[in-house]
Length: 135
Length: 112
Image (cartoon, rainbow over all chains, first blue to last red; front, side, top):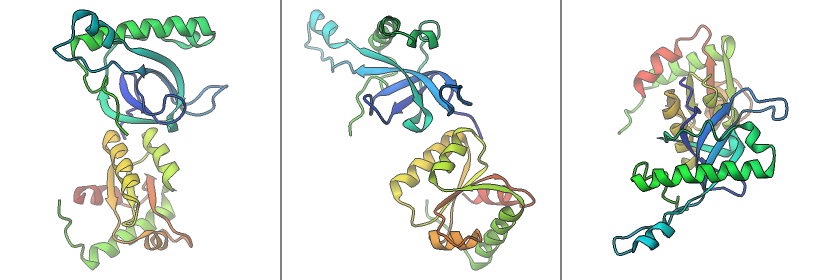
């Protein structure tokens, strides 16, 4: 009886090219829109996870291993699995519906998401979100 | 968590309450609609039969945990649950949206 598909909720994408990847809900459309008459949400997720960083690595290697590739997508609710985790990153200003209109805008939005997720990864918080889901 | 052996009396009363919900309340049957009611936070109680596939059962329980909705494991398989709902087909999971005149919501989640 509590709505849980809210912004900042961490979810796992189940279908499509990004199946198995973790993402965070930026904006949810419970009622659907004219183009998508079903419940869906705008998510930003990790396409390529950062690799495991060990103490032996040099600074150059750490920087290379901590890179993240991000994606931005509209997904149907039936194609995501919600989790009990949340991720507080402020992505609302950079990821919005008009960023999905053209390829260039999507790429710039994904780059901005990549930058914000990388700095969050470097702080060491939300470690669950940045570990690959093994299946 | 060891489940308490359900006595015949409470089992019959669950069936009675379920019959009352079928008559006077709103419900949906089936996995897809159960998940949909959980997502839109319309579900008040979920009832699962005892021969439900365990992975899917855990998935529904996880969703119900997120939505803070009670899950009741029915003491019978999907054939029995279908009969309890008054249907001539098997029902493996159902979601009660509006209990109507029944007090199933108040009496059941306490046990679970």
